[in-house]
Amino acid sequence: MSKGNRVSLNILVYAVALASMPLVGFTNEPPTSLDAGIFSKDQAKAGKRLYKQHCKSCHEGSYFKPVLLAWRGEPLSTFFELMTSAMPENDPGSLKHDQYTDILAHILNISGYTRGEKPLNSTTFSAITIDKPASK
Image (cartoon, rainbow, N blue to C red; front, side, top):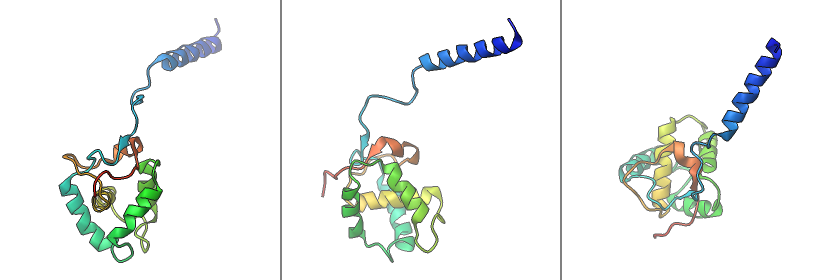
């Protein structure tokens, strides 16, 4: 067998092996709800301070509940990407990733979503679907 054929055969073997492996991180479970306690009280409190400093001049708190309702069914990651790339309006993308995450926790809090014990984690945003809050 020539060297080129061995390389092709090795690539084929690796491709078949990879294709037969289960996809790690993918499940048949429905996406997590925003109302599943995905942010903590302390995180929302930190986000409130940042919100007052960077967001409140343009967005009153009552602004977000109807906005989030209009985004129902969309992944939270899409909303977060828009937020981080377009806000604050006078300096888009200028905040740290964790600051945007804390602000989002505050926005969820004032929009009536249930708080939990753990802080919001941006690595799980794609598994969270925006839905209507159960409370308030």
